[in-house]
Image 1 (tube, helix red, strand yellow):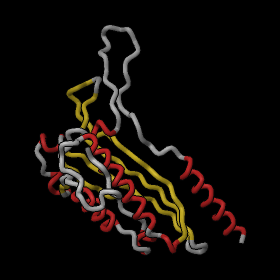
Image 2 (cartoon, rainbow, N blue to C red; image 1 turned 180 degrees about the horizontal axis):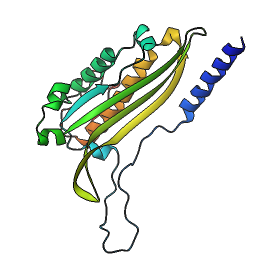
Image 3 (cartoon, rainbow, N blue to C red; image 1 turned 45 degrees about the vertical axis):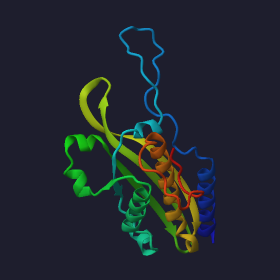
Image 4 (cartoon, rainbow, N blue to C red; image 1 turned 120 degrees about the horizontal axis):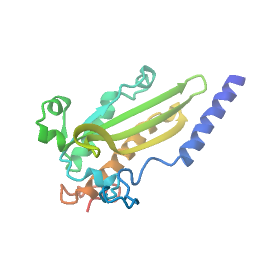
Length: 209
């Protein structure tokens, strides 16, 4: 009984964090220079959304899930399929891992890697679960101190913590779908002349333009 109470308190704590935790968003990259040194160039501030401008394709990578999560129906394949179908529905080109690996240098520069990691903790004896979602857009960037050095960096990200009863385990998949919609909103806002939003489900769906 003591163990059960401890786990219930733990899950409640996670739920509180999920509500008040400021999900990673907003401006992330460069800040304007405030120094007067003439050798330091004036930089342009940019938002997470702004870093998506010019991306022409997306490679979706989903991290492996724990076996206990897959036993309850949450699989890497189902999440990968959900994300890819959602992106294609809104006119965003999706490439496979093989296509991404075979990309030319220019294609690689114009492709973003959308990475999802869902970490799930289950306590079946009390019928509860907790989860953490990490959703990132990774793309090649140049280092400001050495413009000839190309590396991979996260330029857009969102995260979420949640809890629930095992009878509502599907809520994790629904939370992932919400994060996908947030990415689609950001992408369409950064690339307004790309494919328009489908007419169906207009009220519920991410809005471009």
